[in-house]
Image (tube, rainbow, N blue to C red; front, side):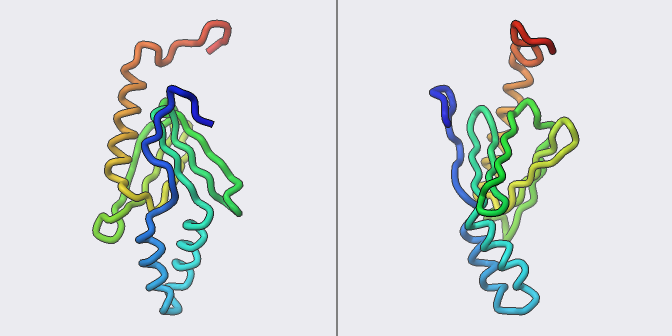
Length: 136
């Protein structure tokens, strides 16, 4: 559910090139596991990146959903795939856990967008202040 303040930067699945590339690899017996992984990702994984949070739905039939707000992200790591056409990103959270975004299209722009939102949250005067009525 999107509030009026929430603006979507990216909403969709993994890069189509990842599926095509891995289908071609599937011709060989060694490439079959990669092909199966790419087909499952393309069917069930969905990313949603807004100005407030990063959401990933995946797992069996897309039933697992993970949402992370920018204040929880400590570090962003990315690796280009197939000459930089798409990439894999890992969001390292402040509690040490990791959220993977595999086969992210336009991953460089998305990484820059996430880093900008993180910087905004850190420089915001409201960051770190307890909401009235709630203990920190």
